Length: 450
Image 1 (cartoon, rainbow, N blue to C red):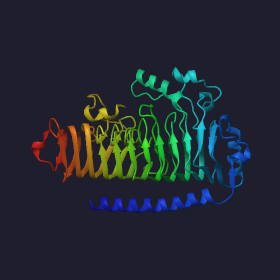
Image 2: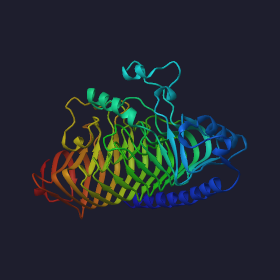
Image 3: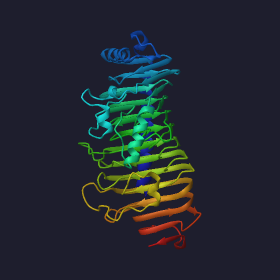
Image 4: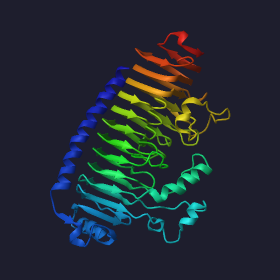
């Protein structure tokens, strides 16, 4: 226990240092050096004229000059996909909107047709609206808006999901940046992405601060922030209101030379409004460790705190700290499941199928998780902790946790589950339903099972 506390303090100290350094980097990139105004390169900002060519020329000129700030004055800049260069700050000013076209062919290779995506014969590849890889020192800032024009994409995506539960129709992401070192996204609004909004992949030293991300509640697969195989990430003071995961930390593959693909990630002071909550997974094969989520509020989300994976894409998830969390009208406060079946909050009230696999190279392992100072009201279940017979979820501590819900917390295939100064208040049934679970800290009469 002492070691875990020390680790949490060290992680927070590191995150604070990262924030200071990243803010300094943002200020340096965005507000010093040469300014490249997109209007000087011919962008009109009318919302009707296509500004792709002048915007890309501006970005290219900035890159060729060794870096600087690409300035978007007030206006609406309609564009096809754009590529960034190193040492670039995109400063989208208040009153400026960088708006994506909604034409599928703009995001696909010439030899792939949108109809082939719809019939399932091809999956893409799509390019993101704003993309780049193998870069250093990228900043997106300025108080303006990046809009993905997602409405045209959501209708067929929802139809495909209705035909096949859990299916994600391939679509472009709004911002997709790969292997970037020193990435800052500061004080912008991201909205209406066709699919995920902000996807840093295999990035290091990432600061996402004061960002608002919005999509309609029922827009399919519109995750807000998905750090994937990233290290040293701080997400702070963001407002997230989307149609899928608000934050999803992913580790879909091993990264050469790294024991854990995703590590040292802090989410602090964020507001979750609608969406599927704070997730780790479902891709965890590369391993996730040292995650802190603190001082966050949740209202009207499908889930609260969620770790999700399955036997096809599981790995080690360890050293996870949740603290100082408030939830209101969240369908399930806690969902830690090793048999994720793409059914969101329903995981909290359904047992895994009897035939779920229990061996192989991608078995999920969850361990060393602490939930401290959580207060939640849930109209449905308190939640679910569900490991596998061969891979029990282990060492989960609930410290000063107070959950009021319709039904209780299901705990199965789990060891070392400890409650300290905690209370589960339910409207019907026992507060805990236990099966193959080792639980301490609550009176025996408050739960059923073994």
